[in-house]
Length: 287
Image (cartoon, rainbow, N blue to C red; front, side, top):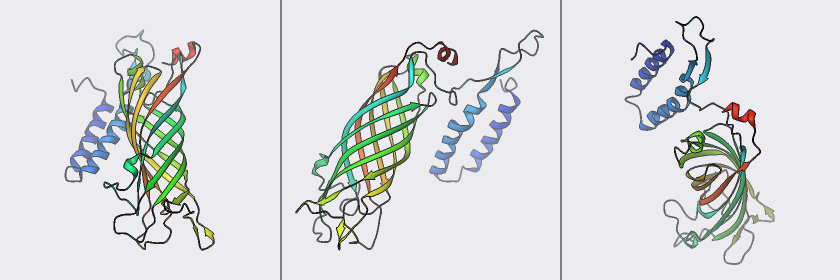
């Protein structure tokens, strides 16, 4: 069995095995990162195989490299565009000076609404680029027995651009081999926030006749799962965190010497619809 494998595959297999053995005493995080790199980066490159070529047959066509594993293969479908659009709803949670995870106290039982809409472009059968606009509310009362902080409510807007990595290729969905596809996402975004006092509705960012910036960079990341009703329509359940590069998301400016950046969470569902097109024979050939 081993003798039948190409020498390149055997070389890389031995090389990766040595690395794995050297990681035997390291942390679980390092092992997980190593496994991710092997599965996502190295193994697809090793899946390059010669097709239609027999060295013993003098009439065999010239060898041609193809991807047996379609990780890097550009997405193409004769009837479906790589573009899709979505709309979703959900709830939010805030984490900062007033409330820290996992104890999200005094947040109206998380009845803080979230609405998002966006468009995605499928790069490969595994990876998509997603642009999204979200409108949402954040709300929190201060911790019990705390006279330092002021409770806030805020209507926010966010724009984000993320890469979405699915673990089940779209080709398996389109061949009806699977209807579920878990995924990870991560990227960058910007948020606009407007914290106001719960007690008297005053602007919490207006301090000493100056106004603190109400815009901040955010780093979105999270997980989700897609359920395909049809190869072009799916329902997504998603949870994610936004790491905000600001400590005044709650409007409490300069009240705590132990400065920590705030964050907030999204939990929601969305419907995603892939654009249908006229039949494209060239896209059929690219599959």
